[in-house]
Length: 183
Image 1 (cartoon, rainbow, N blue to C red):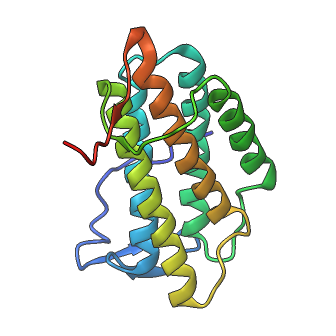
Image 2: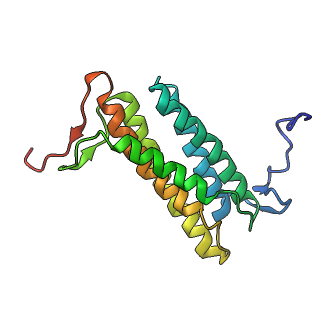
Image 3: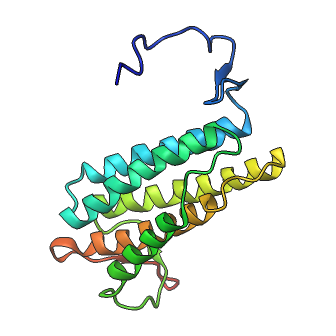
């Protein structure tokens, strides 16, 4: 395979447009580019989370998530393309169930915190929720449905990131930070 980018700057976006995967040019602040950009931001946050030195099993899951998010961004860059599969959603559910298995039941709301990795995981979760909203908005605004599994994947991923944050807060004897109404 040849080089994908031989020159980083092309000057084609200097007037506020960018190219989609199908060659179409759209405004850089369009709903589609907002959704793609939020997916890209989420992918960067997952990278920051991995760089915190998370346990190997979580790193493996998050690395796969990064690949899937890159695929999802590509899916959004070509209207009508469907890349995200039901199997990808099931894989998230499997990991979610596995990681949640040993956690105590929730009786209080959790504040983002507990450790640096857990906090980064909560941050990724909130951006994942925003990505889900942006993709939903895109589908409603353009009247063109996104892939059948795209919103499901983002919804499960935010749940997985929440559970991962709970796990990461407990690494090395740490604990979660609970919200207290009586403070």
